[in-house]
Amino acid sequence: MCRVDDLVVGRRRLRRGDTLLRAGDRFEFLHAVRFGSLKSTLLSADGYDQVTGVHLPGEIVGFDGIAAEQHTCGMAALEYAEVCVIPYRRLEEVAVGVPALQNNLRRIMSREIVREHSAMRLLASKRADERLAMFLLDFSQRFELRGYSRSAFLLRMTRAEIASFLGLSLETVSRSFSCLVRDGLIELDKKRLTVLDFDGLRRVARVQSPDDEPDSWQEGRHGVGHRNPVRVAAVPLPGAPREGLATPLYHDRC
Image (tube, helix red, strand yellow):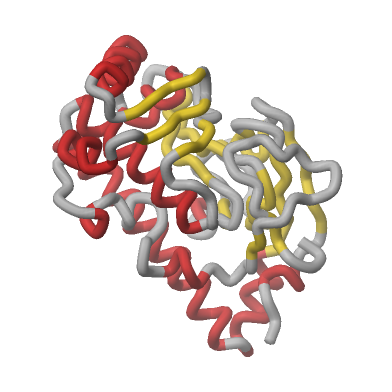
């Protein structure tokens, strides 16, 4: 069976701040995150880049360009990262004859739609401390899905980037982090974050159980996140950084 890995035509390595895509770029390729992490951004009415998403290893980005054949979002590296380049037209051609691959693509695109709607609901209905708690629970869940610790991880986003993503001011985010630390729910050591009390964090986020966590915001606990057509493995690439947001890698050519 053909996998997305088999369609990769190249790789791109990025350092923090390097641009992968700009809004308005012609849509030709999807990009699979091999290691490191990326952020997607949208230019706001006042001319600032609003962070609209964070993308971890094993995720495929660039679907925003399909409808208009040009990208609506920019994409940049949050840290040292590598992506695999996948020609979308070739992927479409192969998927026609491979129902399993076609179904996986539909699931991934469906997940992106649900994620956007969930993020909109979050920003519309949650207080500042609830938004931050939900954000941290989401990251914890996504690391766990990749075989990493759910309780201790690195946040490569700056406070300003987190504030942009959550629709809050930098001061509000800093204050909310301080409150979570003060209440003994998390521990912070520069960019390394440790969750000390998951139940307490859920109470702040107003979710009742792990199943109520934001599994549709970024990636499903029981859903398509487990069926990503690109196979991943938690094996460091020789020469790749071992310390990072996460470093699971693709098998084979990718």
